[in-house]
Image 1 (spheres, rainbow over the protein chains, first blue to last red):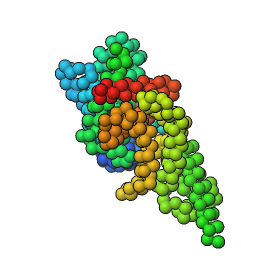
Image 2: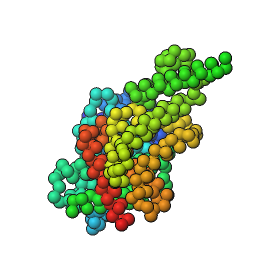
Image 3: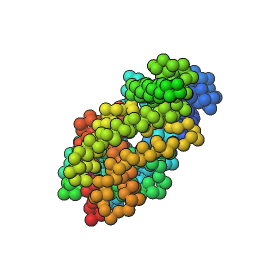
Image 4: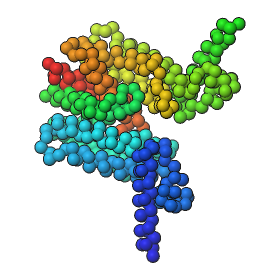
Length: 203
Length: 203
């Protein structure tokens, strides 16, 4: 009996997270209302909080699914591992751009979500985010074998932030919107330039 | 009499924009309520709309003041114009970082503000934003005299977006917060690498 109840709860919880994912994908984080979600999966409003601790947890669980798909997309972009580290970095930057363009609201939600005041982001969520940096870290470690882990971490973060900025402003409807095809080329050119400049300095 | 009334209206309008600037600086765009602003400058709630067309215009006017101060900060960073184009680009990137750190909410408001649906950003506001790109465009034109205006524009946009991303994620309280001193160094290193890589490719 108890295991049946737990099983049912797990299924409902999964359905809740999927409903939240659909709502965010369609209308962004601002459109997320627990009342809608309760109706989506046919439970009482208050019952949502039997399934997740709060809306922060719900959004983080959706983020976890987004990050898992991003991880898979970056792994596919890396291909057979035969590309040079420079070209691997270009490929994952372009794949990041494509992922953002194809999952615009879910990708935005990763960055727009703020925890309730005073509440830290849980360890598991930080670990998942940090884990994705390996896609940048590994090719950099091959390019710069003499650098420490800490130095490589800083460079990985800088490269990621720079590409993120190009994707963010490039996909904006506002200041400097760019067609995705042109944006991919710009990102590839800038990543190549950054890597070449870093190699030149190190060499 | 008419000119007195117009003068009074201009003064109130100025006071309204300054009140909005203080509110945004203190609590971000989400904290902006016309009711508070009307109280701040002792006018009736509805009278706000005799001074500006709508909240969008009010936010754009505050943005205009922020952009003017950013423009001045970048001009100061360029100094006497004797630095190399490469170092000029580094200086303005670091100055952009400093400005964002010192004017966090006003700077964020420049990028977070969205016009009401279907309403375009007015020409004057776009012109003001585009005008700031000259700080990046001019050193790039010196570095790459063979490139067309269009090509230089693309590179300027890419460089700006990359630096913007580093500042944005670096100043976040979330994923990868960095002390401003370290952030400035990272930005300088990455801008140098990008410029060196672009020069190498062009040469």
